[in-house]
Length: 320
Image: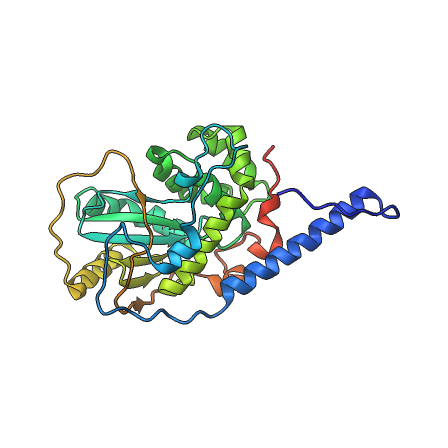
């Protein structure tokens, strides 16, 4: 999105553009903060729950399921329809569905991927017991930019890129020059400079991510990262050690009466996912230590990067 121009003979063009940019950024931030931080009443559950992946909720349809038409000026390799879909790791026929809501600059999310994720993948995903739906939930501008770039990575390399961003979080997430790191790392995963810059500036992609956040907040009352939803019904908050995470999942599936017979194999490549089910049973929230709170993330000791309110994401500079 380019900056709007002011028609003024008395003010130098450079100063005028700067003033308009600041005003536009303030307006964007005000709208975003009000819409994301407002209290939304929980949705009333239906009589019967549905967990079919192909069915999406009214919120998700309104928020993100409008026809995703790739703009005519998009570079080769950009597919808006694919970029606006959540990605699945594992076999979607597995009995346990784990949705992860995570911000790329969240310290606790990084801790989960460094300390817990590999063991979870080995014991649940690789064995066919569970599959993971990853849904980015950016808490600030650097995380939003990282989310936009990640969504432009090919399906078969997406989770490798995501995991790398968490493993190397300290190298970029809290640095002023984080875009240079993202550009170099994206290139290693097949995203060239033209595609990188386009994805970084894509308003359509950004709007989808922000609308998804609002839908998730309304559907499951997600306000901190990382958060996990088990089989669309039970919410777990926080980055837990593997043993605690394992126990929480086991308790959830027993309580929900899930048949945990594993499936035989994983798909070779991750598949896109519909995030929302059509209707939900009452959600039980299980709080845990180790999460970055959306409402207070700028003051969190593990989140040293600038909060989303400090810059207008649409006007992200190109990496040098």
